[in-house]
Image (cartoon, one colour):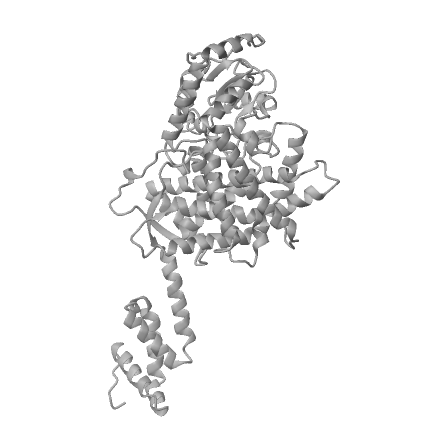
Length: 601
């Protein structure tokens, strides 16, 4: 899932080489541009290189590199030239600054890869701030992510969580650890795919049919999309110079982008065609979008491209956020077994022996919720959020931010700022006990989903997926480190790219949680009780438990059953029925229980 570092470095060196060769031409072109007067008081920053400004300071983990710069300069900027390309970092300023600049920072910059993949910004996450975006966001929130719609997919989530638990349970007897990263991504992927188009496949084989084919296609395409979004584009660095686009052709970025777009478009079209060909009684998300497209009274005349752009938001936004948060939460809990045990005790006490955590149980799991909150603080899925663009001149902390400035809010740095948090790098969920700080955009200290009108509209559904997956992983299993591995051996290194993911998968060993064993015990106890009126069956069951070597789990039940056998003189009953096998078995089991039974009886 991670973008390979060596590939990025190679691409970066290739790009730099081309830019260096083109410096004379670029310098003349830049000089020829209209000499717009610079703002009076620019934010401070490190010394800049010609043409590329401070781009070399970003590194392969930009959120960490920019956080270090912010510790020195506060609000760090990298300019190639005013109004062309500038990136600002906000990580140390007051909530008032953020609130005052929200109206000026509501739009998005036009970036090559995102523009193409979103069908020229027909989606919600990447579209510029205008009337179209407002109407599409309304549809997204009120139609696609309404409480009724979210609730309607409860059965889908429950079924897929059960599938994940069953998949992991099969590993219990294996000597190999569980790849939790793979299990979690597979779960969220299947849930999102079924929410988007799964209802069209009700009654079909979800394990071997067309649904699985679509899921596998999507997983392959998602890797290509993540690679492209994390790639450098010369066109993005110099948007006003169309000639620079040739560099993207030479580096192969344009070709890869077009191939990925064609594959995605074909994938979307297959899904949509399935819905256009049949009417569904229960609407899924694509059915809703198709209905809006056919509604002539709609404020926006939607096309198939609008539907495809929205699907991009649902697929790629939903998969990354929920999966990565769950993986990081399990990673931190594995590093702190006492916290994992505390979370498990809460879940198991609250849920009891139901066998599965249901969505209705989540509201009572307060410690689980602050575990998720602490994970979001330390491991925001998009550490720099989606870039914003300044719509008109504004000031932040007294500094001038000119129009067309691309602004990145480093929420990763905000979440680890010692001005807001004690021991900011420590995973300590208890810091949120009794605290009103939340992640819904009202507290500047915690902004994993952004804030204001651009806050992630799928936040509620994403958190639901995280809590449900995490709760069941902790409820159903006792996790431990693989044999020979120590806590300090857990790899916490981050992979490169725009999302914050573990460089290596999370591998944990497990024991089936005691409640799973207890659940089986309870089933056996019930069978023993139900066979009271069938002495032969009850004797055979007790005999089988002894032969399997598990009778010690049911000592009380077996003792009670054999007492009833003795009290009711079942040996005589078997004799009257000429059941010699029953006589022999009853005789042996009673003697084993210590009853004084003579052969003459």
